[in-house]
Image (cartoon, rainbow, N blue to C red; front, side, top):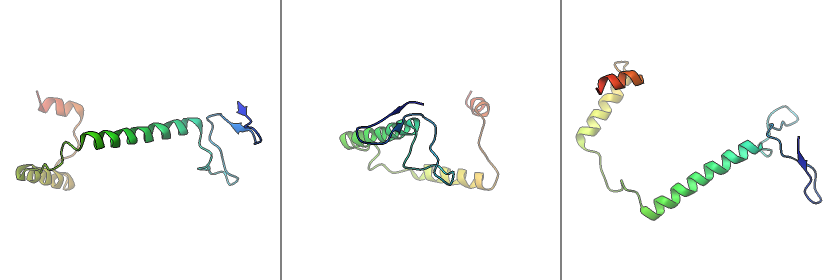
Length: 98
């Protein structure tokens, strides 16, 4: 386990093993390196998405669903709710669209 001591501070554990609080639960204040990387990736993706949306605008802004689409969507939702239809396997989708 590699540790580094910041100037004037306690050693910092750089391993990717989760830290545990005294009661055995993981502390939010002590994320692992992998968790920090995932957090940075997530926030970078969100920031980029927002920047692109700000720059280019929402391409769907002002568009509305057609009445036919809404009717089909609601009918599909109701069929799934009542067990008449469910999720399809990849093979079933391929077979339907040959």
